[in-house]
Amino acid sequence: MIETVATTPFDDQKPGTSGLRKKVTRFQVPHYAANFIQAIFDAAKPDGGETLVIGGDGRFFNREVILTAIRMAAANGYGRVVVGRSGLLSTPAASNLIRKRRAAGGIILSASHNPGGPDGDFGIKYNIANGGPAPEKITEAIYRHSLAMTEFRIIAQTAPDISKLGETRLGDMVVEVVDPVADYASLMETLFDFGAIRELLASGFRIRFDAMHAVTGPYAKDILENRLGAPAGTVINGEPLEDFGGGHPDPNAVHAKALIDELMVKGGPDFGAASDGDGDRNLIVGRGVVVSPSDSLAVLAANAHLAPGYAGGIAGIARSMPTSQAADRVAQKRGLGMFETPTGWKFFGNLLDAGKVTICGEESAGTGSDHVREKDGLWAVLLWLNILAVRRESVADILSAHWAEFGRNYYQRHDYEEIDKEAAEGLMESLRDRLASMAGQRFGTLVVSEADDFSYRDPVDNSISTGQGVRIVFSGGSRIVFRLSGTGTHGATLRVYIERYEPDAARHGEAPQRALAELIQTADAIGEITKRTGRTAPDVVT
Ligand code: VG1
Ligand code: CO
Image (cartoon, rainbow, N blue to C red; front, side):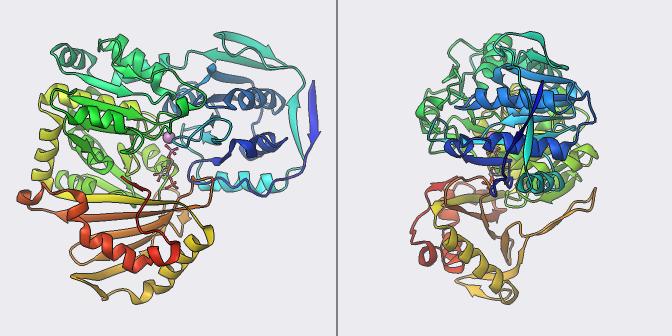
């Protein structure tokens, strides 16, 4: 029996960079999650009988929302829900399932790299039929529906047990519980030379993977240990936990410090990697060297042809605007198309669908390809391993050879977290006000050549997205970019992205902090960061 439940709208359900992200306690407010799910269905408008994929990263509150979403799908015309066992699906695995099962879309429950648990964060994201995050046109429609919400539909029966594989009926809908790993792992086998990677690992090449007690544990164990033969124990923190073991599932220098430290010692593993809460980010570490995500994108694009799935070459590369221009150098030298999009994976979907690009990446530890429509942490790890298996050089050697060939884009991102919202908005506003007069201004040895607020016209559907970040470019090509995060749940997070190109191989050995010192000072001078936020140093540098 379908129930129609009267409700009142919430005014804070505007999706951000990657879905709706709030504190768990906000999502626990009665009807909060149900309202948003109804808004998704109202925007998606199923005709009847469609398939919907549902899964999440296993964080606290995942199961409750999944059961609600299943019961609401049955009351909103879906014919089948495909759900990962126990509600688990990594974001890239969900994207793959949507595509493989020709689903109309998918709901992914995750707040990605944000901490979990009763006091942590939660999130709901909607992906469309191509497997990718809903584009702005749809997220805006979801928001409009949320503001006018008066009732939601839900089936009265309880949802089936999702811890057991198989099919059950719920009203007119079939609920199919699937192994979260199997289809994804088979997809990886079609892209990479598992035989070559197996030989590399058998030759004594040692790897370590930190799943951060998040969703990638079962995926990494099956792929790295079972299928590729890495020794048991290669995957650490491999059990998905509701609170990520109290940690912060963000694979960066702060939260993956233990892994990085292990790789920095003589005699440590040859290769280390980690992924985030929902499995779409990656950290790549070689012995003695952390690979910055922007460099990783460039190296992967330059070497992808070494893996069978990309043996025919790649069509083009896309990166988010704040990501370093290292990939552009590869595109230029190899005669490939290059696209610069706003932050967030949703902007890559059209380019991938149109076949304009094969590989995409963001500075925030996200890389992926046209095999799905999300960034994909384990995919990046496997592509690196495939490249290492063919080249038989160390990560450090591959990186320095890359810089020698293409030049080095020194790069850092400085995050100022949980700053006062008004101060953050004031800072951005003031920058925007000064943009027109900035060209020609001198800061130390740096002269501004151009300054703008990035706006993007999608080359496929011509949709326009404005206000995507303030860019200040200096003569010589160095850049400082300012933008506010769209994924935080408390206060505002200011992100400052700093980049300088160094063609001279003799100067590739500097620490980024040193190589960027003048730009870092200039960022504070131009952005008035200390003056406006009271902060004298960033909380996180990546
Ligand atoms: C951040 C990153 C962005 C990424 C997004 C979602 O967004 O900067 O590159 O696409 O998170 O990633 P923002 O608006 O906070 O800068 V995930 O792995 O958190 O879904
Ligand atoms: Co993520």
